[in-house]
Length: 196
Image (cartoon, rainbow, N blue to C red; front, side):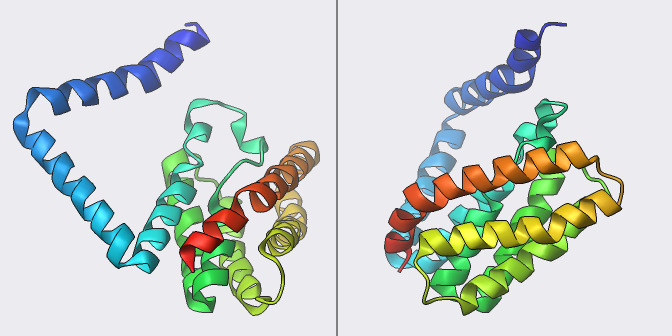
């Protein structure tokens, strides 16, 4: 089976079916309209809940690509670190730790690549949330990059000690740092201004 057929079957076709289902039934359109209304209400009246929800969902779903591409787990793209550090900075220690746990826990489940080594990340990211909240004097760009490096310093040796390949762990770490450096310098300052 060709890769383009897999992408069509796994991504395009399900989206197409969902759109057809929504358009066919007026009740579905009503539910979507109410959901959008609720979403806008949260965004305007309850900014904290809104951003915590959006960042948690974005963080968790940022790992869905691992489900479809066999070796994708070695690429360090995820939004869990971004969500954790932003929430820790804007809303404090407890929220940072909880978002760290929730994003990586649900991201691991969504990716369908649950391995024993992933528990290292599930326990480490909440620690990053706690540490990030304690360094509130730092600019968000520097804080995010430092928290990404700290995360990688903690997990990289533990991954290797628990059986992960050295090369794939290094590739993950390097790409993880570069991707998060971009996210924290280009996107995080803007999001943080909206959050607080």
